[in-house]
Image (cartoon, rainbow, N blue to C red; front, side, top):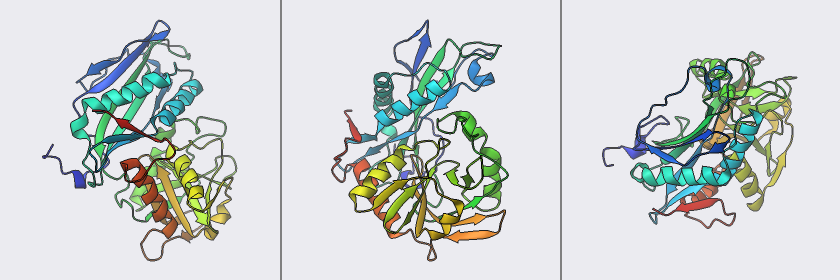
Amino acid sequence: MSEIDWSNLSFSYMKADYNVRCYYRDGKWGELEIHSSEMISMHMAATCLHYGQEAFEGLKAFEGKDGKVRVFRMEENAQRMINSANGLLMAPVPEELFCNAVQKAIELNKRFVPPYESGASLYIRPLLIGTGAKVGVSPADEYLFIIFVTPVGPYFKAGFKPTNMMITRLHDRAAPLGTGNIKAGGNYGASLVAGEEAHHKGYSAVLYLDSREKKFIDECGPANFFGIKNNTYITPESKSILPSVTNKSLFQLAQDMGLKAERRPIPLEELETFEEAGACGTAAVISPIGKIDDIDTGKSYIFSKDGNPGKNCEMLYKKLRAIQYGDEPDPYGWVTVIEI
């Protein structure tokens, strides 16, 4: 794949060779199928099109300096998709089926795994949709599970450099007691207007407040939030926040690297006390936050005055990446080596 400029990839779609699919019909999942087409054929009354029966995941595979390909925490992603399926009354994809499909998709598209030290990775997108035809509001009786892959660069254009975000109270990402804690496509559809507004104003993303009271930090549109102060890694606790696999990993690493770690509600006014702040997720890994502007009140919260990441953000980023690439031992069993 010498024609691909690996070091300058954006976070965008590139066609690979194959995708992997599996259908749920007659109350059971079928066998994995291999497809080269990017197209899906479905009934026009499919529940994913009308009633939002759609969930997805995102995970990555990395080539190490030893030439081996490693996928990061796919069992966690499998369990999160099961939770999403249950939240939308969809047929859950069994963990074994999910993991087999991930491995098969990587094996079939090995030539699209970016080389070590290119700064890129293989993004893996599992998708679960209701394909059964319904006119009344009810769950489908047929589902399609599909995995495609694409090589990607950093999610935020700045890469591992501080990026600026904004707070607005005009939009909510998810309703209280709604679907904010599952990876449903509708949550992201609800974030598009605010996200585009942020981009037009020169910000990389929106940092949402809780939808009920607008008093607590929720999460960014595409990632979880964390702040660091007094040698403590602090991330919000809320039933409206998607549990990030990356955040869960950083929470563990922070403790093992000498920081305290807290998951609790974070009042908006506490923002000004943080020494560092960041957004984290599979796509972004860690995106240090330089500044957050509250465009409703005019108040700004500054975390980087010199344009560089804070020492703790950098320490956590390097540690997580080292495990993902196999540069350091994986004492947690997070990484699966794909035998190709």
